Length: 162
Image 1 (cartoon, helix red, strand yellow):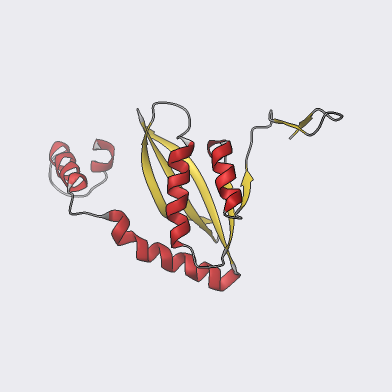
Image 2: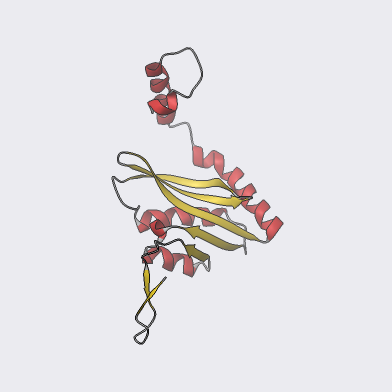
């Protein structure tokens, strides 16, 4: 919190700004998702009208010790525009498939009817449960994988480089 607070301009001391920021974030009257939802819907609808599809980027980022940010962004002109996000209490590793499916289900509610969805993510969203959910929604999905990843093609071919 203090790293964010040090970027806020003003004459107040860092501890004062940090406490003020903490109180703001703890305020139950601030309903980010409710306020942000109409804006996110407009962006998604605009992309669908313009190019006839929705392009999403999903990722997870370690924010601090024990916390990660799981985020879904709209890919637009070489930019990633946040659509929805959630905090994940995790020290290491990926967020759970359940948490990922819940966030993507929320994003799905924001999408225009009949929109083709193309989703790009990394290994963090590669859980079988997540892939099944995306497949059930008929979303097209591309996962970036490590170069050491291998795929079992069939009995005759065995493991192949990905």
